[in-house]
Image 1 (cartoon, one colour):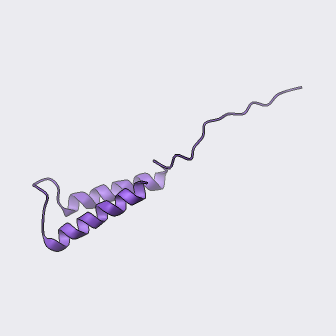
Image 2 (cartoon, rainbow, N blue to C red):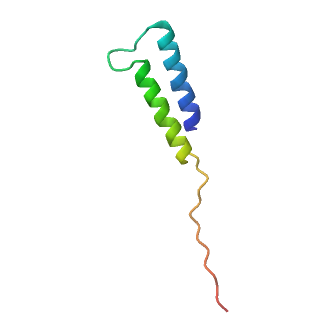
Image 3 (cartoon, rainbow, N blue to C red):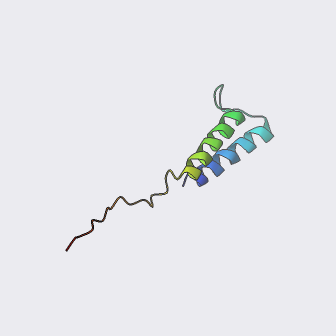
Amino acid sequence: MMAIAAAVAFGLALLLDLTDATLGDTITAGTLVTLGLLLVALHLSGVGTGTRSFRFRRRVRR
C-alpha cells in the first residue's frame, strides 16, 4: 500500500516539475519527492503490509 502511495507522490512530483507549477509555497516537486522517498522507505521496512501475526504457541509438556 505504501508503494502505491509513493508512486502517486512521485507521479505528482513529476507532473509539477514538468509543468513548473506549485501547489502553494510549501508543496513543491521537491516536497513530493521527499514524501515519495519516505513512503518507499516505510514500504521497504514493512510498514503497512499487515501480514504479521503475533500468535505465540506454547509447547505442552507431557
